[in-house]
Amino acid sequence: MVLLFAVHPASPADTPPVTDAGAPKTLPQDSIFSSVKQSLNQDVEHDVVRGHFELGDPPNVRRYYCLISTKTGRREPNGVLGELDPHPDGMIAVKNSSVSMYSCAKAEQAGMLVTTGYVFNGAPVAAAVPAASQAPAPAESPKAAAVAPAPLPVPAAAPALAAPAVMSPTQIDIAGLKLGMSPDEVRAVLKSKKLLDYNESAETLSYLDSAKGVMQPIANGRFVNVIAAWTPPPTSAVGDNYQVDGESFEVMFTPVPGKERVMGIVHSMGYSPANAVRETALESGLVKKYGGFGSGDLPQSPTWRIQSSGYVQVGDPCNRRGTLGGLGALNGAAMAHENLALKRSADDLKSVIDRCGVAILTEDHFTANGGALREDRLVTRFTMTAYSPEITLEGAKAATQLIQAAGGAAKKSDGSRAKDQTAPSL
Image 1 (tube, rainbow, N blue to C red):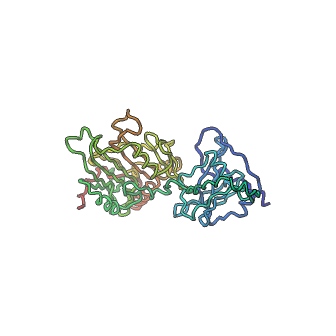
Image 2 (image 1 turned 180 degrees about the horizontal axis):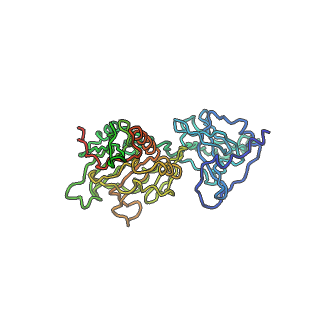
Image 3 (image 1 turned 45 degrees about the vertical axis):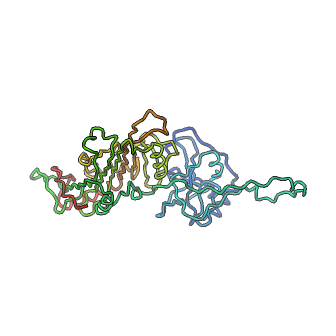
């Protein structure tokens, strides 16, 4: 019975969907006894994921997780199948797991082990020691020992993770702004930026009065829609604003009066040629902060998708980066995004969450000398955007409940788009 349960694979539904459409990947199986031994000794309370590898022929690809103990730093030898169980500290465990006969060490040697997206905050990592090296060495003659070369130093074990992981929408940080923040938190961050211009716009939740055929605002339905702050380029350089110094923020909120939360952020930076940044430095910073790509592997417009499981996937197979993606304006007066929670239907938002993720992060930039060698290219403008369809859906549901409580049957924004409120003193 122990043998049967120890190697019984989890159902495909227990494994996160795999989008790799490349050639099938295989590994030789280890002895069944190594799987049984790990099953009996596995520390479910302290083992967390340090990486994964995938085997099989699409669409029947399975993902195996390699575990490490937060208590001892010991790496479990074989990959396991099971359901991901994210922890509040960012680490991820596996529940309902079953141990396979595939070796994590062999997967790593084959270049198949992916460690990006996993956090390890436990005990120092224990170096893996081959079983053969643990056997007593054969006796040597004194003469042989005298001429034997000194043993080479053994390099320290590499950390379990080299890249940070974004585990939830609210952990995404763009220049100090985070998804899920309140308007007061956003105001405090933007105040510290000391940008020259600041503006808040508000809207009022309203509904169509079918009897009168007019839009009716709901009582106490006014909410903060967008907060923008920017330092525009010099007037003489507006026509050449790809190569001037400037910065802008546009922060979008859920339409829940008094309980608004950030659901979208657009941050743009512009540089004069004298202050331009190297493209390699920008890409290196993105990889270090968000992971998902190797050094020099970033596409022209990289996209990161945070999954409900806590995984970070890259690319845009669901074609949703365009929601906020693209180079943003350096002048906040040009910002005119509609409220996403009032524009999108609940079904559409649910579909985006299911097919794409709970948050989408994108980057776009302009290179002044695109024809130069990669190491010589200079970026004079870049934009980071973050959007959470999950937070947007929560806001849409809350707004709908407020409108229904006021007697309305449809959720709409104020057709007149309320005039901008006077900016607070920053």
